[in-house]
Image (cartoon, rainbow, N blue to C red):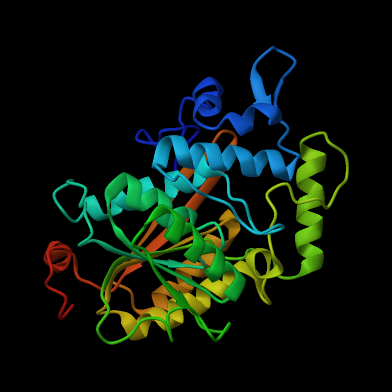
Length: 310
């Protein structure tokens, strides 16, 4: 795969942060702005409050979200990278629709681990009009997501996953059909590993050792036993049961080295096709995997309502 260095062409943040516009739309952000050594307006990305205020402004300015907030210490996701995932999912669906991006509420997306921020449904609904169902194991995250929906009059379905061992089981019923699923899985295998990763990030940024999480995150958002591979492997295993109820299953993969074992897992699951889609956010490269059990000659039919058979 060629290494990408820029955000998706349709990403509204590809030119950077337009602070004058953001402050005009959300004056509260002005108190958190500062100047970098070359005189550009920015914020202190080490300050969780500044990061949260920036997200609030971005969601208001670009995605018509008038109210947005999350409980203290919950994951406050970087908006540009999250938007990239949505845009590449749109391209994935377009590949089965003569390169025409399917839009509107007839397109159903399932967000596994939607979180307190509800960020993927907010972006995806605004950009493409898709109908989202958000799932989470954390009742406080679901409550926060419900408040965001209520205050913005958004029609996003929310479901509680009662069993932390499950991803699709318990939240997809026999009447459901989804065109795409998405997930940002916990990628560390332990809290110790998560802390080491955070410390390494700050050292790489030249800030010195620290375990402070400027983007926040509860334990379930950051780590799980077995880490990313085990979590995604569980998704793949459970996806078999719902092979005829979803066109594309997808998940972010934070570590490139995990692609090889995951491809073997997908091969054993008998998927019809498996893709790796590379993305970028500045100097950081990210990716997601996508798999389907639907034969290529039937995928356009699935997009247009024919949900039976492979």
